[in-house]
Image (cartoon, rainbow, N blue to C red; front, side, top):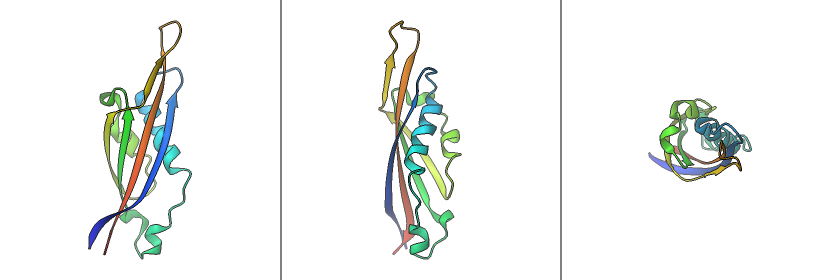
Length: 113
């Protein structure tokens, strides 16, 4: 058996005023995951917790994301999290804060023939 990429889910999350990178990243992953109900594991005779989920988060400052907090929202399977440069940080008019936009990709792999 070999790990095969089965699903790609994408999402976007924001933190409007707080510039909290982890909050925006969690919201982006929730956006990707919460619009789906995957039955792929069942369809190929595997338990849902056999899924390996590769999470990629795009934000302007990847070092500010708590990867463990992001992975904690995965409802099934086990995951890895990589944070890369992406997303947007849009300063407010006063220059005292910003709106943060994070993007997420959740790539689901299963060990099948």
